[in-house]
Length: 243
Image (cartoon, rainbow, N blue to C red; front, side, top):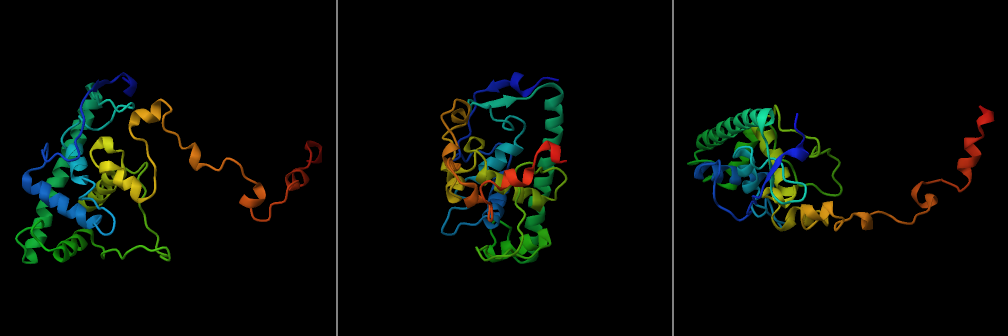
């Protein structure tokens, strides 16, 4: 099996401001963008619409050309052989899931007397998403919230998920992933959470970008571990002969 390091790199870029649709029809684009904007709405901070999450999703669904960015940010890795065959089959399933999902959003919007999901009011859109998800609309999160929120991205896959769960995952990925994939325009997702990310993927490869400044360089164990006293480690450890 050929490793990713041996895959060819196509020097292609994704413009987050592009309105060119590689997979979605105009209607599907508007529908998914509207749904994404309710999942991660705009308030005093930018939401999915401003971060161009729709571009991220459209490119992801368009085929297999935009799956893996080259480590140096110079383009995208081009799959071949069995890897490409498996990726195309998986992509076809994802395309069907989205197309069926858009039809379901429209069907439920019409049941609520809206012309379509994209043309419905935000209130109706929220009602539709509640019906599709089977869950109540989440309440705003605050520092005093005690509810457990599941939002793991790393290691989380979109395999075998419902349309709604898949869309929610893709919205989060498009908002927080590296901008090279088309979303997170101007790093606004990172800025919102205070993450100072690299200017480009290349910076993570040549040492230009470092997270060293975010780590505590000098510390005292007494400050980090409540009740810790210097010397207690030697007192409690004992010697090999004490065993």
